[in-house]
Amino acid sequence: MAPAASPSDWYNSLPPVCKAWGTACFACTLFSQFGLVDLRNLYLDWALVSSKFHVWRLLTNFCFLGKFSFPFLMRMMMIARYGVFLEQHTFAGRIADFVWMVMLCVLVLVPIPALVPSIQIPFFGPSLVFTLLYLWSRENPNANTSIMGMITMKAFYLPWGMLGMGLVMGQDPVPDLLGIVAGHLYYFLAVLHPRAGGARLIKTPDWVRALCYAAFGVRSAPAPSSYARGRDDARAAAGGVAANTGGGGSDGAPRRRAFTGRGQRLGGN
Image (cartoon, rainbow, N blue to C red; front, top):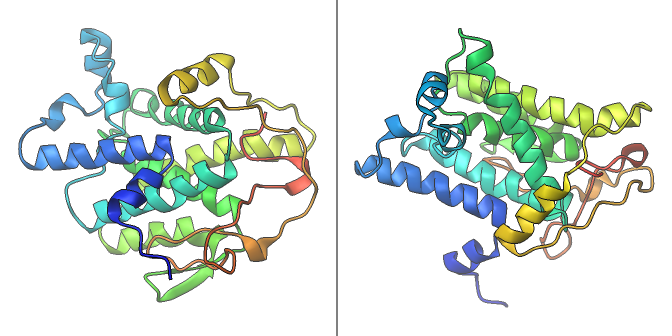
């Protein structure tokens, strides 16, 4: 029997984007807990962005998932499960496409407080986490999942189940709903619209590929434009956040799976 992987081995095995984001989120919560970081310097404030050129707020607001709590733990687990699955399997070998997907979803979320003054959310990190959950659920719609090991459902409904659990716990549903909206907009443009015969509107720019190579030392080749039709949902591989998910190989390792409906692949160029 192979020895169990140590926490450092697990951390080192994480793909670069989710590792960097997850580390930043944990660090922000840790440092703010001890007063080493003032969250007032990180939250999104369009007035400060426009008047004092605090452009860093456009990114740092995604690096805080809340104080140490059960919701914070759940969000970190969602990055480790669903974000890592998307980066390692759905976007395998296409780190630039994954980064471009995240950037587009960020561009959907960031302008909301400026466009809709009634919605003032200081930190959009939880929304982006829910975006990853939503995309994973569309990638593996028929995978069997359960919430807290008690409520079983297909993965397609997991975002709504998690949203309902948040409501029961007294959380504001708006950030999670906005994450679902951002995820669905990307999914529509990347998969549903081309599948219906529309033009492919999302294509990763070359400068994003160059940026990823400079940042991570990984070249990302363009994705093939078509794949065989059909799905093997029995092999849908992903763990769940407080959710038990079927799938994977005989050794328990997840199998690589990409969306293959009518030749459209999530994030493919």
